[in-house]
Length: 308
Image (cartoon, rainbow, N blue to C red):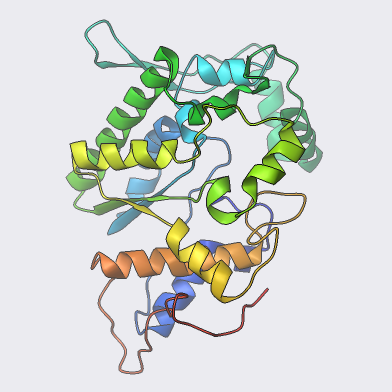
C-alpha cells in the first residue's frame, strides 16, 4: 500500500500528505516513504534502524496491514508461499519467551537473483506473477493459509505470531522514542471495512466462508496491544467508510478492479485520513504560513465531489 507501485509517483500518499501540509501553511515539511511490498514488522524495524533513522524524522508513521501478522512468523509465512522459500529475517520466541533474531539465510542463487532484480524490469513482473501461484499444501478451512489470521479462536502458531508482532512493535516504538521522535501506528482497513457486501464477494471468490472467520480479529488484537503497551494505534477505516458513503462510491471503491492495492483516489483519501489522525493527536508540525487553510474536511460532514 505504501510502496505504491500501482500509481504514478505524484499520486502516492506521502506526496499527497506533503501537499495537504503545505496547503495548511505547514511548508518545507517532507513526508518520506519507505514502503516495501510484502515485508512485515520485523523487516520494518530493521529498515528503520538501518535506513530511516539517518534522516532524523520528527515523526514515524507505521502503516499496519492484516498480513503483517503472517509476515512476522518464520513458520507461517514460508508455508503460506508453498514450495517457494521466503527469504526474510525474523524474530522467534526463545525458551524463556524472549525474542531471538533469525537472520536471513541466502541461497547459492541469491547473487544471480539480486542482479536480475536490479537490472531487469521483467524480473519484477515475473516474480509478481510467481507470487500468485501457491502450489503448496498449506490451507486453512480450504482457503489459502493467510486467511487464518481471521480465525477465532487462534491456534498456538498464530498466537505465537501475534506475540512476536506485539514485541517487535514495542521494540520499534522504543527505538523511535530513543531517537527523539514520535511514533504512531495506523491500521489499513480490512477487506470487510470497505465493502458492505463483502460476504457475497468473498463467497463468490473463495467459494465458502469458514464459520469461525471474523474480519474484526486483527483490529481487536491491535487494540489490545495498544492498551497493554501504550502504543498509539489508530484505524483508517472510519474515515474511508465516511468518504465512501458521502461520495456514493461503488466497487472497487479505493482500489482497482483487478488490483487490491490503492488506486490514485485511495492514496488521496488515505493521505487525508492520516493527516486528520495526526491532527487529532496534535502531532502535526506548527503552521509557518499566514495563508494557512484548514485541514481536509471530515467526509462525514463534507459534500464535496470525489476526485478520481
